[in-house]
Image (cartoon, rainbow, N blue to C red; front, side):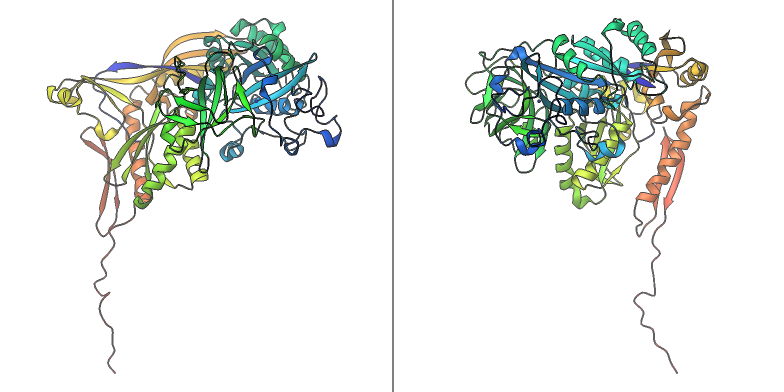
Length: 596
């Protein structure tokens, strides 16, 4: 198990190769407000909290700031975040308790198919604790490193997190990375040890790991089984007792942070917002700090977990807002919304995502270019971590070069294009960005800077015009059973990695930290288990180049002329494939007759 954190550049001369590629109060619904310890299952069927009962609008003024809690669930992949979210939704009556409640907040087809969370989802929960009604805004986040930008954005709307750890697997790489995201954001952290029902579960061992690695006292850990619902109610109690209420004021002018958004072809942009100050309601005129455009609010509400319109949203609350934004470019993640003629200081927003890999995306048929352009614009509204640059290819035509946070991110984006927008594309082999320090005065004048970043292999400058090349490096964390330490260290050394730290987190597990050149790990690091020679990087270019040529040969249609496909290493051709020309039928126009 491993993760990446940080990014930098190594300097090196002669690097000439680049291979392409939301509790209800009784006054709201007197028959629906569950007391502590009651669930949808234990209430009479006609009073069960379901979507059929939620026709009237919720009065959000019944939830003052001091009775509001905003929190996220963070964890490594497959440690039970979504299952815990399902149980919390059931306990608070947001959904009926049925056997079909699996990954309720994972709404995308790709999430259901892959069994992972790729998109952070929000749900507003209403919970009665010690006679008081509380509003608990939950955000379920992804666990894979490729979607860490979703996690960081979600944390901006929270004051605390549930850090879920598998009682069998223990602390894993993304557990560490997500902990530090929450720690750096100065959020309250509640450790939750899940899957205590498993045969090989060892919660005491995991408790000691948490204490050693994160310096969190073991008695603060909550041991649960999200699958069976064991002790899950204590998680809700801890959220109320240990996570502070948001620092927000209703009397101040409106300041709302847009932390996510989706696009609806009929209603336009649906913005997920966290209100830091003030209030907003239907009919209000709001202004975007980013575009300075004015909009009229058509609808506000909370997600419970589906859209539930409300009269207003108040400071400290999280919900959605629809204001007639019809163009995807009008909705910027990190934007601040405020009332017309009541300007405020914009909120800090988010740091830009740093793409780790780039790939070319082209329509299979150039007649589909505009449709694909619209699909990419709408999808990048929902996934703002993707960087988009226009690109063109002599062989593939007009397209785009997209930057992703990793290979899984790239695969999921491509799958969503196909499933949600019916767009078929040609995706080139992923590459990483490089930097070059130019020595040519002509090139410096052309680029208007001495150090340039190259994301397209076709634009890679010749080494005779470059003083030095710089390659991106990342800090990788690997957690492994100690019997594999030797093999993993050999693998890391073969990938030109520099060891930074090594620590035993318990008697059997080791945490290694290495500085890796990104190009060495981006494609096949997970699958590589053998030692490689020091000259591996250049040798690998030959086999990868041949593979690319073969794939292009299978993708490009035959023409009336022969097409040569070549892979070059500097000025040297290292692989070649040929798409044969159609043979001309010289007898096609001849009339056949017979003589008897």
